[in-house]
Length: 156
Image (cartoon, rainbow, N blue to C red; front, side, top):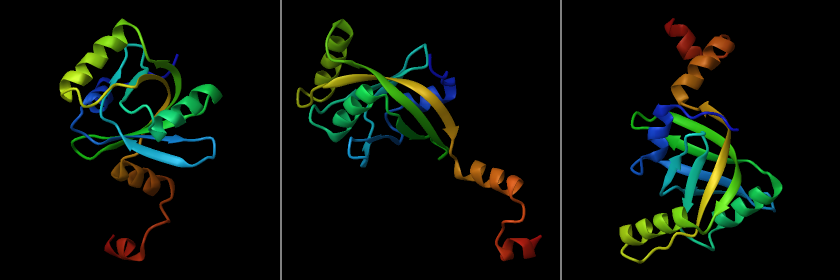
């Protein structure tokens, strides 16, 4: 079982108005990032990522990650511009069944029949990090107090 997602982060991940990016690697090791249009978080903490395009590089990379147990990353930013990095491993590609069919119909309805649903990827979360710049800067200052620009030291 993966890591549990907080309710706050769940709201960020499921909000289609916010910035969310999925980052994956292919067999050649090339990194690819793609905007996330839809995702949801299951009760067990796993993430469902909805891929619309059969031939997308993200879809191909997720297949590779599924086959070879490779990690992917999801970047998310909330309304206050706090950043999160969620890492996980694809565990399942859902391409049929009642749940898939219901979601497929929702996508067809949302996009007036112009867009299909290719795959619903279930991703097991392996880590969640707060990658917010202000938080990281505070940690850096606490951990390495001697690493500061001279102008900041002169102000103190």
